[in-house]
Image (cartoon, rainbow, N blue to C red; front, top):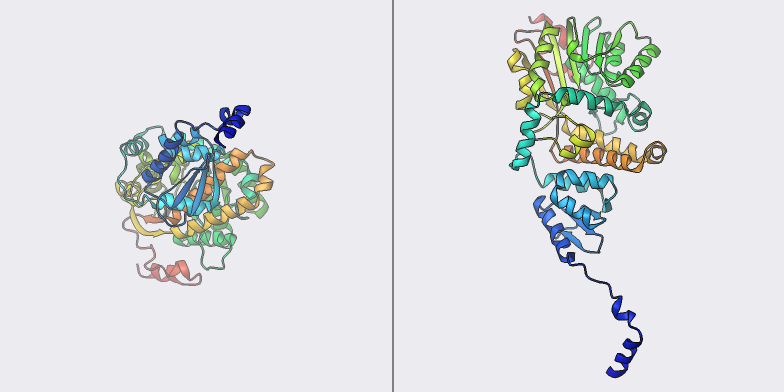
Length: 432
């Protein structure tokens, strides 16, 4: 039998010569994948390699399994996971093999909770972000690039108000549009808007807040923005609503705002300002606000100071910075402004982002007719990662109201925020 087998093999040399070779790095591939997971804090996910190998930490079923397409992708991920995960996912070299994308990203983020000591490179990135003098100019340029992607793009997956900031869900049954309108009301009530009151808004978006303040509260609004495409759309909305005489959309840097106002509003703009300019923003607000005026800043924030995700800074919002509450106080304290209220809407933004992502996926076919697959993967990851960050507590959403220190007109209770017909403002004024 052995002799016959030898003769058979001699007659078919290919059966020996073409046996698949084992790559000398094959064992190292799986080790590197395990090392990446260990370094990420042992999140509840798995990595599936191109060669059939699989890496996982822990025994429970993974929330998601990510497939790595090739050895080069694995090594890039090992060298710089914070940046390269996004780069490789966008390029299609990391894909979701099974499970849920948001749940998988949440596992990764939850494995490194707020307050985890920063690595030396992360501390350096935070220092650069805080002191770089051109941060605000760069942020303005990237804001224009981000928001000028096209109104048609955003209209496919935002709600009809075209609000691109955290919504406010007053009930479990609230739709995204309901919640965005509720957010606009929430902001206007906090700022004490009344008929004839003058408002200056830093950053208009597509005009939803300015138009709401004018149409629902009778305010007169000056709104500043540097995105021409957004401004043209907002002006058209004002004309259509017959509000041209009550709302003025100005193409200019908010720092050039002039006049006085009863309310100073900044919703979703502070992320583009940069810590080096917080004091300058507060000085502007102090100059614009009348003695009994109220200001409101609505911004993404953090529990503790740390740098923005490097992939977000590179591909989505270059120059952006997300402050902690302590850092945010640099807007108010040096300028003698008194903080009257701080509210954290973190769960609301997690839900907002989940609904944006759902809309985005539902419009995938329509979006694919306008945009390439890499761009769509980038935005899918950006929305999913942001949702995961708020769910995991890596991101917060702060609304801070402020005024001059001696202002007695500020509401004594929060009743007016939740009871539209309350007389809070009237009796507050009477108590002076």
